[in-house]
Image (cartoon, rainbow, N blue to C red; front, side):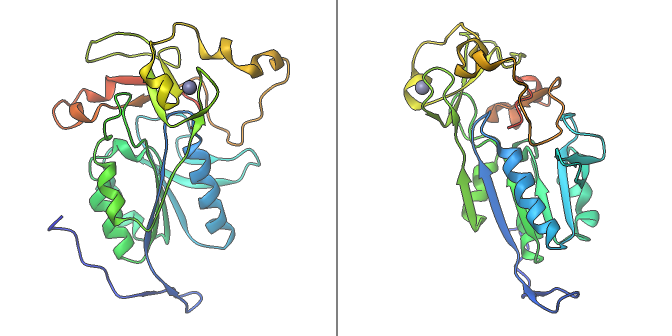
Length: 253
Ligand SMILES: [Zn+2]
């Protein structure tokens, strides 16, 4: 942390003449907890208030359009893709609010967020806090002592329908690399995380399955046929192929 730049003095917003302090907001949660939806909701609030908002997404995540994140009401936010946040540093400096989706994927997320906040920007990060083994994911937990606001969202446990704060691998596969979709992973509560893996598809257990004739309304126009990936933090630092370790179907999380 020694190379983290000190905070600037209060930044004066040229348009309003008001004082704007930078800050970091973190949206944690397991798979299927709506992190991206919450990220977009917050960013839209700033956009409506005429702040310049930038969305940064992971370049291997193709759930969105190439250039934008779009909501169901066809409002869009400018979005850029990258594998390293620092590649976008000069661009990010042109915005007042920066949203980062899938923050756990970026190895430089801690330093980048802190520098941007110190420069007076509001940085909102959506990220998985833990792997399916309940280990800290990447270095996102290092953001905690640097952040002003932190929330951990919950999903619905796909085994018992209590609140779910963890992600669980359904199978007993022990291979380092396990590529799969929602058929391999669940959002689960504490007790269900410790129980034996289930073989049944969560969709088949869903109480909403009976309503399948009614199309689900997504709040975001996010592609649902793409895969999303969850990393094992231990692989993050050791293996460039770690991104293949855990792979999820898109869940609008
Ligand atoms: Zn449960």
